[in-house]
Length: 221
Image (cartoon, rainbow, N blue to C red):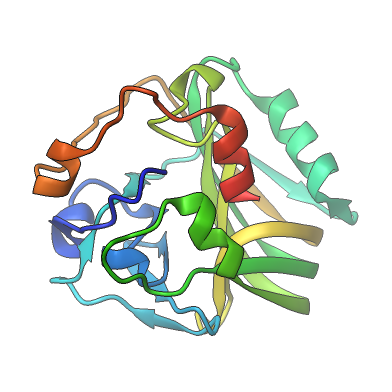
C-alpha cells in the first residue's frame, strides 16, 4: 500500500513454503498465481508464463494446499453467492483458509498492473492504470485466501483471489465472476508464518499509520 515494491525473496525459495497461492513480482511486474507448485507470472496484457526460479517477489502468500472440505457446484453462482457459501463453510471467521476452484466460468473479470518505475507510487495510484480483462465461457482455476478482519495490513481482509485459465495461458487478480459449475476445495489453517523483507525501502518506510481496510478494499476491487 505504501509503494514498497522491491522484491527480495526468490520464487524458488517461495515454493519451498507452499504449492498454492498468489502474490506479485518485483516492481509489480505482473500478478502471481501459484497452482500445483508452479508460479505463473500474469502480465498486464493478461498472458501468463511460468516464472523463473530466480525471479523476485515483494509480496506473496502460499500454502501447502490440503483441502479439509470439498464440494461440487452444479448450478451457476455469482461472486456474492459463492462467497456467501464459502462463509457458511468456514469453521470460524477468525481463522485463515485457502480456496481452490476448478471449473467452468460463465464470466470472469480480472486485472493486472503495469510494471512500475522508481520512485514507486502507492498502490491506490497504481490501480488507476490497471489493465482489466474479461473472458466468457472459460475453463479456469481460481485460487486464493480468506483472511480475518484483524489481519488487515498483513493480508487482505475477506477474499483475495486470482484466476488462471485451464490452459494456463491467461489470468490475473479476480474482480468479478460467475461460476457455472466446478469443484471447490477449502483448506482451513490456524497457522501463519510471516517473513518481512529486509530491503532498505521496507526498513525506511513509514508504516505507523498502517493500512485501512477501506483503502485495501479499493486497491483490490
